[in-house]
Length: 156
Length: 187
Image (cartoon, rainbow over all chains, first blue to last red; front, side):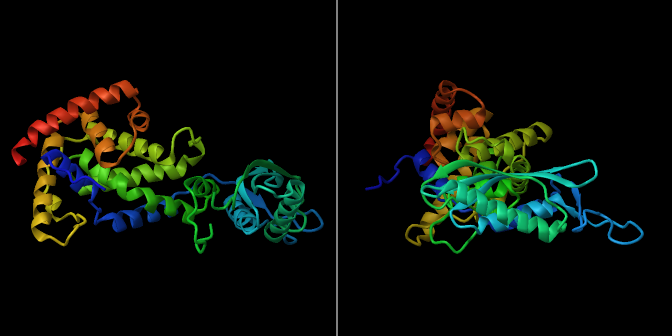
């Protein structure tokens, strides 16, 4: 049974604990707007055709995709893969703006066949790269299982 | 981060997703911990709504930018309170003390029995508490709020304030004594 605070300080502390900031929704909205406006570091990555060329036309035009966009899509795709969650996605971009390497750390559910989960993740990554950066983008994709958790790693 | 699951994701799962740029996951953390941080900031900076909102917003933007530096050595909640505390200290250094405003009286307090008289008494008590808190030294005020209002443990408070558990005990002891003296007329 909860004790009823009797002294004035105890009563004041109880009242302070019970406070629900009425302006929280407005503050939360402000944070949402600022987060959205915050530009996190990113690199541009050049789109490469199946022939290995980055040229999109006879003038040598190039198409670039922000690494932020690629990471976001990889996060979404890996997050939809049962039994795994991405913990780290690192993209290495070379001096020619080509994607040189992808490194992914995964958290897997206890009982998952880890090599199989890594293969599924690698295939998912490759499909995203093909979709976003062109068929000529074929960097090595290193997958490391960094942790195994009991339950769904997207929730635990 | 899926939002349709019945089981709410843990802080660790949300941090993992937010580190990869998942804004929805980050906002779930914001709405989970933000109200307590705002309550703490408001009492710490003298009751100013605008200052408290600024402190909490800056703390969360800092968290968003530096989630990679959160190593899980403390709970996420402690880490966030530490960010709020630092921003509040910065604000206090650069500004003159802010007087208590009348809006304190309009703050929403959960009413146990829909008792209007109790609500008025609570509001007046809170006003008196804020006045008493404003007279306390900074660390005593912070330690008391974190312990008695936000329910943090001594170790968590020490991490938040960047001090030792022994210092926290001292701040709390002196803070409680001074507050009890100032609030005695409400007995």
